Amino acid sequence: MRFNITLREVGNLLVSILVLGLLFSFNDLNNIIPNTLIVGLAFAAHELAHKFVAEHFDCKTEYVLWPQGVMIALFIAFLSGGNFIFAALGYVSIKSYYSTRLGYHFTHLSLEEMGKISASGPVANIILGIISAMIAPYYPIMGYSATLNFILALFNLVPVPPLDGSKVFMWSRIAWSSLIVTGATIFGLSFLINPLIAGFIGLAVMIGMIAYTFYKEF
Image 1: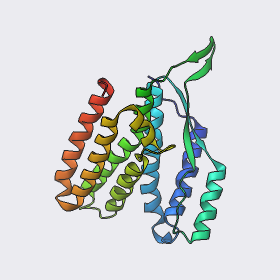
Image 2 (image 1 turned 90 degrees about the vertical axis):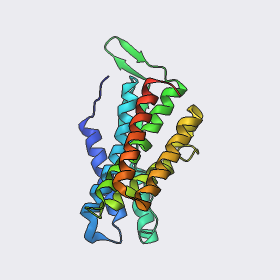
Image 3 (image 1 turned 180 degrees about the vertical axis):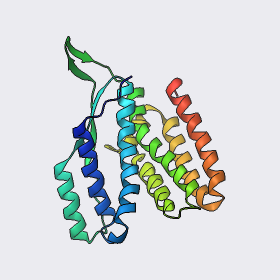
């Protein structure tokens, strides 16, 4: 398995993160630095998880910035006074074939593999949400990180194209429902009971799900 990331991708990710930081701090510029770090980590984890798993299945990937999306996001933010955020600033381009010195390399992605690639983004956000919730009692701003990551994961799991949830749902109803139930339950328990207890339960469940999903088909 290989994992390659180019300087262009790093630059595209940084531009996306900085724009997202501005969008999420539009009415709270005093906290633009912590907001950018929190939003940036959630966004980068989501996109890089897609990239990592796709490359695990021998695909060629690249994070691509969508300049028109950046302009649309900024326009909507100014038009709405920062009350509506358009966050589609880029995407991970996944190619199952690419050129080599000996010609073209072809990789056939099964429905299972496409489902796992799509599930990886929400999984990364659920894990970040759990860790953030565990830290929140000591650093309250991490409560914002927990909420953001859980909401991002659950939103992306909505089974409607082009969201990740549509491909996960088509691959495995069990995997899809397990992620929904786990994310929503741990999110709720983090605020209803001791977040450390909820966090350890959540991490144990997620580690078990990841191990089972990647080494045994649902």
